Length: 346
Image (cartoon, rainbow, N blue to C red):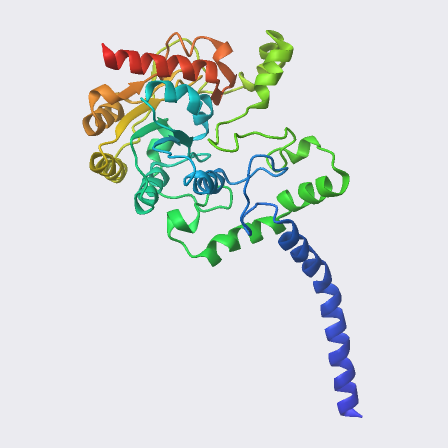
């Protein structure tokens, strides 16, 4: 009697546990079948996903997919403001070089150093390097580890299990899972899906990883009204950092650790005889990068290779150069490229 009772209790527990685990197992099956982050399997193209992807990983995979057929020797690196620099525009100044964009959102100088080391291990020719930086990226001396920013094992050196674990865990967080399942079931974009679902179609070139920004279509369709329609993205209430027409200087970000990483980058470039150009982005808020940081950059990479467009100037004065406060347009990127390469000839 006692054994039968214990067996019955065990069976009830097993059934309850199975019921509790069934949704989890079902979601796990969805994850492995759909591979929403495109990290479980190899893909020939990464340019048209309904999910916002890890840009550092995707850029590297695109480079590896194409490096045997295209002799990439020129690399655009930095944060999301690299969207303003189109590879075909930069190639005008490179004497035959072929460019690819290997950026990361909120990119750190530590990540840039790791990417250059990985290129070197893979036998890449590093003929030209265009670094797009700002004060925040200069201050980051550690790799970011969440699923949106973690670098692939080939770059970061972490285990493949640790890499995959981050994405699997991210899938089960409600702020990703609910928008994702909603979109998969109903195929309709809703505002709360922002940052999870990409409603625009292709947002990157399949070969060079150039940005295809949907806001260019908006500007083309709306014309001058675009900046009026999006004025809330430029002006925020009670923002102490908002532009006021007066000179303001940012705090220092380059200290011993950061300077050491920059010297690592320079050593790789020296080894490969790389032509390096560093652009400090024109910040819409018009806060000048700290002059001491600029001097450190120029001391490491050469005065002729560092170009500071932060602060108050003709570029930051014109709102038409910007999509919103954080990102500027290729129309401005082309102007800055022309300026730095023409200046180098003078």
